[in-house]
Amino acid sequence: MSNQKKFVLTNETKIFLGITLYRIKALMQFEIIAKDELGGWVEKEKNINHSGDAWVSGDAQVSGNARVSGNARVSGNARVYGNAQVSGDAWVHGDAQVSGNARVYGNARVYGDARVYGNAWIHGDAQISGNARVSGETFIEHGKHQESPICISASKHFVGWSGINGFIRSGCICKSIAWWRKNVIRCAEENYYTEEQQQEYKLLVELVIQWMVLKGVDQEENESNNEK
Image (cartoon, rainbow, N blue to C red; front, side, top):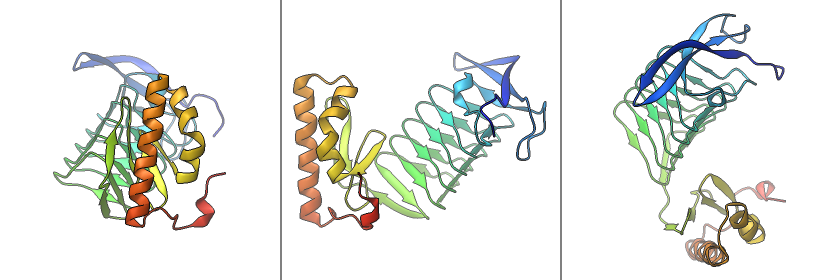
């Protein structure tokens, strides 16, 4: 799809928890969406990427800094809000909610009354359903549940093992040990850390690396994933 807009905010609005939401309408046909078809509700245009086939339908809501991109779908009565991201071919539907800094991507499905929040990542072919609650530093891929056994809170962001051998995660950044050693200060500067906070951040990254070495999870499973 070109860079032209594929949807517009209509004049139909509703207030939800003090936030004004706008019904969207397709400006063109794409995937299974017909031109002029009405969709779900968003707080602002940036909640859905104009490229790809991403769409919000039914009474689903996307608000805050949340974003739906790629070919992802949010439908039914689902809600995506906060800083959450739904991308790839992921689908959030039913009465499910995705919030906080959570990410749902790949071919993942979140539905039913499931809640995904905090810094949880749901990806691959994982399916979260029913009354499931997934939060914290949780990583689920292909139905496999992993919780990071080490997560240190810094002044601004947490630092912890990503659950993937050789990779550290902080906030929404998941990179190799080599990448972090090379870029930790630059990353801190870009997030407006003070000099003291920068040194703290660097120290915590090194502590996580030492833990990973101790536990034997410091070597990348696939050397082709090494960061340049």
